[in-house]
Image (tube, rainbow, N blue to C red; front, top):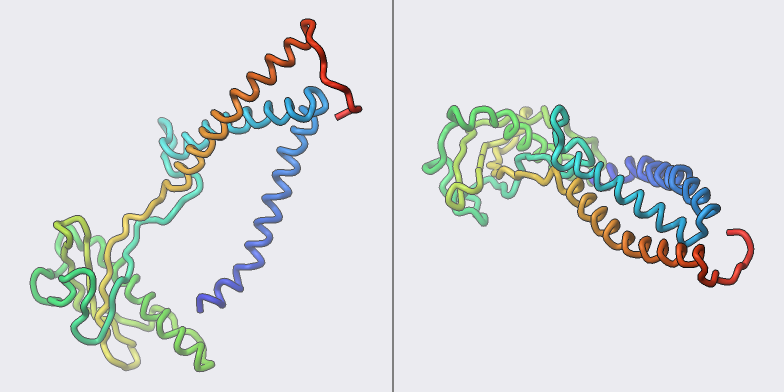
Length: 238
């Protein structure tokens, strides 16, 4: 199933690369050609780089922190918070969390006011996991895939692990047309929504700080030439 999904997305991936390269050539390359014609190859590049990274600092800061009237995390997004399966089995399940061996007894508890809003998300995560596992087996046998709605989930329970730092949930999933019940355990992954925004911000700051001194030195050299220094040898138009 995963390989089929990858192949299905491959044309979109290469189209995205083509669009990105075309955009860089048109919107950045055209500006560089104009700057190079006026300032020369090296000076034109430095002016373009400082301007580009300065603009990216502003844009990445908006993505990361937001401004009044604009929410943060509206730029490239990482992984959203979600419930992730970490163990499953038909009997007693051992995992890195000792609580799994005691399900459904204490410390597991039925959904309460705090955990009830997560019931639908947990149920969907378990259904999709079981559907993915079943579909992989069916594809190997030459059959079709299974929809996640073909699975039911019951006996949902919640608890905390690692001193309350990690939220766990569990439920028994089963195929609605028959089959054994499988106990599935999930934990709450807080995700990293702002990882790309922060990455762009750090990279832009580094790029700006690297190119700014080079631009300053190139400008000083250019100014000394204009005020009486010796110009470098001319090799024709840039």
